[in-house]
Image 1 (cartoon, helix red, strand yellow):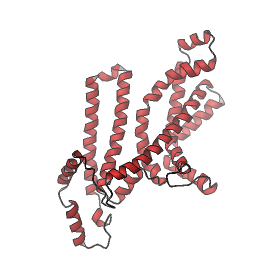
Image 2: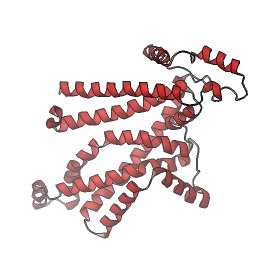
Image 3: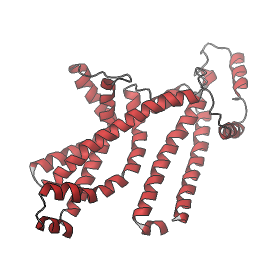
Image 4: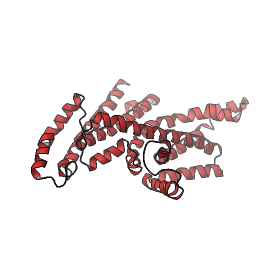
Length: 307
């Protein structure tokens, strides 16, 4: 197990290192820059822009800037926004909290809806209940998040005026982005719960429990569901990675001031320190979620450790 853990950790660190190089060079070589309209006025003279680049160290070779940046990270200096001078630590505290609220709400909605419907679909297999639940799951997996967001905004904000279309951070403003972010995960979890339930409904221990006279709801909830949730729990690590990717779209559409929204805004403004740090933060979170999933698989199935 120790060698398996070391391999997975080394792989995660390797991907994180490669990602940091790619992100750093991509931001520096992209057209434009903070002195070309991202921070300074478009009317600023060439001399002012050159002086700004020199003061911020942007006139040095890209590889030199990269190693300087790594040195600052090693000492705990996350940097400061070029756009407004706000320390990245402050931005992290505010925007990470908003993303955490949105992500956990979406995850909670997903499991609260998906697991009961998955169980019901398995128990009522091949009935209209099963077909309706699986039809909704297929729809949830197939519709793009941005399209679902536009549909919900059109009906619940423009037509019915029930919910705000954007903003933060009151509960009514959280409902639409959380529903959009939870949609695909709900569909996947529902289908997995149903499939796992069907696998265990015909096991020997289920027939034995029924023969002992246990009520059907106890057999389903206390015994079958407990075993069926193992793959659903294992999927959670991957689900966390999906939430990070989808949050970029959802937060931008609903103007929810989380990490994804801040990242998109910083890239557009060529705010290098902010874009670099939060890009690496999201990548690290995705890699960490997959790392936990790999470790969980290794603990559950020893054959994976030697693969």
